[in-house]
Each structure stands twice: as structure tokens, then as C-alpha cells.
Length: 486
Image 1 (cartoon, helix red, strand yellow):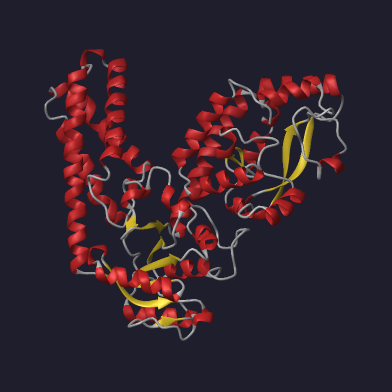
Image 2 (tube, rainbow, N blue to C red; image 1 turned 90 degrees about the vertical axis):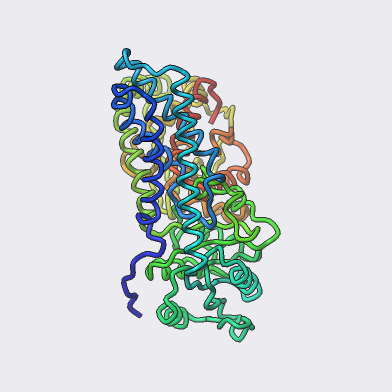
């Protein structure tokens, strides 16, 4: 069935523009007490800095129920950073226009108060419009859980979501949806979306299909990624794609006793307000990004990789040559170690490292590497301790096999075994593998818990942001000052 083109629900540009305008207005008003020369020098950099930092923090993303008060701490931090950054640049470039501490404090306080007032007005106006003009909504999930959420939406019009039907698994055909029809086939969902003008879809996790829900909610996940559950709830990625094709906004709501992944919230907080504000009458919830947003995220991540890797690779080329010579002189031919690893979506690639072990290549494919291996040479031990054996992987990043930040790639033999014994391990491959990652900056390197690594990797993927990549790279750089074996 052909899917008609519709304007996306909750159009991101239409949602963001009033908030960006409010933040810009607050920045302009906060400079009113400055002298003309200082104001001219500060205004444009301040507006740019604040809006960029707010965008990175997710303060322009749609949320369930937002308020200026919920966003105050996040706004305060970014406004303070912006004023300090602008003042530092001004002092360095134009010493005669330096801002004093009283001016900094007054400007930041005035901007924070104005920004919160503007945001409160925008969010309040949107809540009033949502209550008066609720949007047609389909609730997707098992019938009991979906009915529960649909009843809550009907009782609380402030969410602006009016349930018109329940989309349930096929085996629940004939289930009692109360006053709402229960849709169990794709054709019925197509008809319901068109006939009822559905613009919102709420996916409900009752706790029994929690794993599948997490796969759907991931920032850069793809429906065909390893680890996608195709049992109960496993067809959800296809439904998410269907709703996005119709231009519907999609939400994920957990109704089980605990939703640890949802409770943590995305890095920086969904919609910049933190997980406390992101709930549907006490049930944790978040918006699922459409494919276009995921593609933009993947593109931004790839751009960061290329922009950072190319100059770094050029800068460390003398170090690469020195490492290669040391390995060749001490351990003989075969400077580079090449090994098949599993990358994004299970695709194999050849990983490059400086050789640190005297090992049979066939044995290396199935033998677990541990610290203090007797096959390790003195040069190899030094390279391992300083992590310089990983430097050739910068070429893997430049080629697109890997990313700077992501789950560490593993050999096919261990991927197959760990996927059977550790739930969620295969789901690590939803995102490009990396040289470093969240697990590594928490000390999970080498012969450490696979379960812990998998948990950190999936948490990173579920809550990915470009800023988190930058933070992990900075933490990795700091950890290199205190070398540890890999």
C-alpha cells in the first residue's frame, strides 16, 4: 500500500523556532545594561554560543510536558559557560572592552530569568493548544497495557493526545480494547491512520517485551540490526517506520515496575529537561527520533570522525613510524597485526594494530587476550600499556570501518559466543564500533566483565549524543596520562 506524503507531526522547525527566538531575545536583553561598544562586541557571539550549546543539550527537542522551570538548571549552566567564553575571548582580543565580574553575573542572571520566562510562555501556550485541540493517537502494545495508557491519555488532556485505537500483536486478535478498536494487521493500521488523521503513535512497553522496546528507542538503531527481537513486539521497528513514513510523531512509554534505560534518560536529558519531567502520568517516556534525525546524527558522528582523525593521523605519523621501527627491530617482520572483527550491523572488517604478541594467527582468532601474556615482547608490553598499539586504527576510522567512539569490536568467534550467553551483547552492533567508548573510560578494557561492557555499550547507544562523544574522547585523552593495559 502506498504511503501518502504528509507534513511531519510536531514539525521540528516549527517546534524549535519559538524557543530559539526566545533564547535569542533573552541574550539580546541581557546586554542592554552594557556600553555600546561592549554590547556590539558581545551580542552576536553570545547568541550563537547559547543557541549552539542549547541545541547540543537537546533543549529544542519536543517533549511530553515541558516547563521553563524544569529546564532552568540546564539553561543556567549553558548561559554561564557562554558568558564566560565570550568574556574570555573579548579579554584576549579586545582588552579595552573586558567585562568585569559584576557585569558577567548581572548579564547571566538577566538572561536566565528572561529565557525561563520566554520558555514558560511558549510551553504554556503549547499545553493550552494541546488541551483544546488534541491530536489523534494510536496506542501500540499488548491490549491490557495499551488500554491502561489510552485511559490515562483520555483522563489527562494536558498531554494533547486523543486515543483513537489500539494496535496489538496478531495473537491478541479479538482482545477487548474497551471503547477503542483493536487493530491487529498492517492493513487495519493503514486505514486507521488515514481515516482518523493519526499524527501520534505511543508505543507501550508492559515489561514483558522490554528488550524489543529498547532496540526501537535507540538513537542510531536500525530495524535490521543484530539483536532486534522478532518475537512478541519484534515487529515494532517496522511499525515505527510505518508511522514515520506517514509523518507521525512516535513516543515510547514504559508501564512496567522499572524502566532503567528510560529512567536514565538520554544524555543531557530528553528535550533538555531531564528524565523527571519526561513522563506520562508517572510512566517514563521519550520521543523516538525519526530516521531523518538518526541519519543526521550518523552524519554528524562521521563528520566528527573525519575532521578529528585526518589531522591527528598526520600529526602522529612520526610516532607511527617510530613504533613500526621498534616492532620490526625487536620482534622481526610483520609490524602490523591484521584481524577480522565484527563492525556495525554485523559487517566484518579488518582491524589494524601494531603487533604486540608472538602468536599463531589461527590461534588468535579464538584465543582470549589477557594481561601479562607470556607471548608479549618488551616492545609489545610498552605499546599495550601506553595504548599506542591502537594507533593504526585511526586508518580504520578514516576508511569508515570504525568510529572514534563506540563499542569495541570483537572477533566473530567471540561475538557468536557472547551473543548467546550475554543478553543484549548483539545489540551493541547497532552503532559503528570505536577505538574507545563509554565502557573503556570506565576501566572496562582487556580481561574484564563482558556483561558490564555490554551494559555500558548499550547505555551509550541508547543515549548517544555528539557531545557525549566529545566527552568520551576527552576522558580517553586524560586516561592516557595514567596508562593501563588493554
